[in-house]
Length: 206
Image 1 (tube, rainbow, N blue to C red):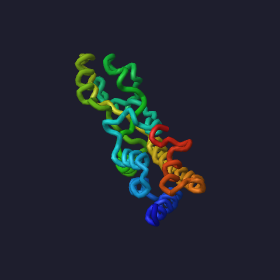
Image 2 (cartoon, one colour):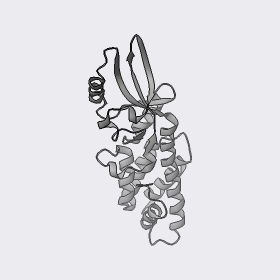
Image 3 (spheres, rainbow, N blue to C red):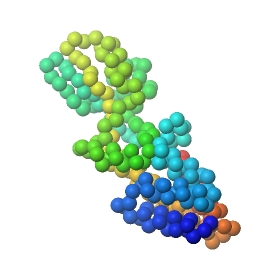
Image 4 (spheres, rainbow, N blue to C red):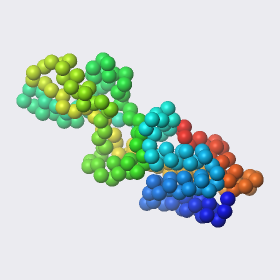
């Protein structure tokens, strides 16, 4: 592993310790570092974090599963209600097992960063997949002329999404620290990167 890879390692270290640096930019450097060092595991993890885990839900790290209350908007009689909290047990029976008070954040890190930056208030609003059709079926099931549900969604605290970004930043700091330890006994810098990635720190699943 040449000078370029060493520079990438130090750039990642410096950026990870700087809270103003973009996590997306750090992950791109991790992809480049994985290529330079021959670490396919590092390339795979960093690429999944950048591009999202769509189609790979089974590989979603636990830190990307965050709590979030369910809310509905609608009307009841002459009154309009917004952001009414409901329990999953209030949903139609066929949806109760599929929609919980937890969100799997499958989006790429850049999207999560933008959601936090652009959302007003203290929460990010996301709708469960198929929620439009679910709301239609739910209203049909209720069959109440004076009541109608307009929208079903999660209100995810911005601090929960920020916590995901912090988890990744912390893992990058750990990667560099582990590399510095492994480099003393590894046969090559590339081997040190692989060991650093795998020792006590499985980034893809924690």
